[in-house]
Image (cartoon, rainbow over all chains, first blue to last red; front, side, top):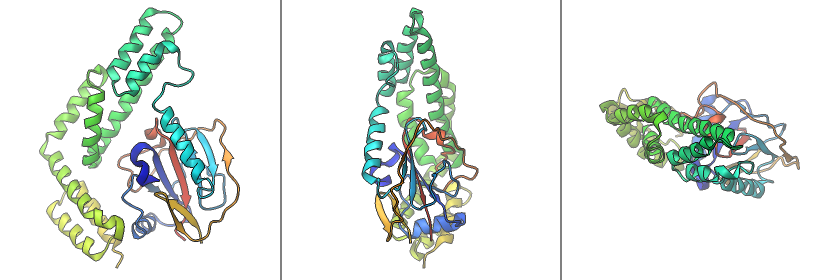
Length: 251
Length: 62
């Protein structure tokens, strides 16, 4: 499912039998489960309300529990519910005032500033939808800020490839949004810095090495490449990751 | 043995299957990870997924 849907949904895999963090990661590599957008943790971000494994909890677009159960039995049901959520994500909420349809359409169509402007027009009319329009502007700005914050965190954490691709899409959508203009300028300056370019190159090189590992795990051949990567890109965050991964050799 | 689904693929042999699917009813999930998950790519909390559905799967290594 993670391979099919990529980043359009979040997938959180929770190891629930008392493994250590390293055991969990090694297990995932050895079984060829890495290489998707799924993330792996020992923490239970939501109660499964089940004593059995496997089990799942599906959250809707706003973090509310949609369903719990056995993921094997409910596989088709889960796919249907995810499809429904993905459709809903492209539409205004059912309870949104009709007057704000244009604002939602622009925003969800990736034109953030036009969405804000459409909501501002409704707010300026001062009629019964004005308060909802003001609240919507706040919500749009929060969403924009959250999206940019993730890009900023990715830059700091050395996830440069994703930061860059995420920013390319974000900057097209957020063009003209005054509330984040300064932050966007700072991000663009970072992209131009030598440190970022080195991190980016190191991460691209690491991603290339890990292509093989996604199918076969961390083999000795992969470890050799990881060790060379560590030498070449010493001091980068990608090299730190490469060093850690080389400890998961499966032969 | 357990069975789990990863990337849409059944892994393992025997499902501890019970018909225990429960529908949710207005329960909101909120969590910030104390330790960054593997492959989190700077995603730090469930809030970071806002606007997208989230599938949380509980599985085991044994």
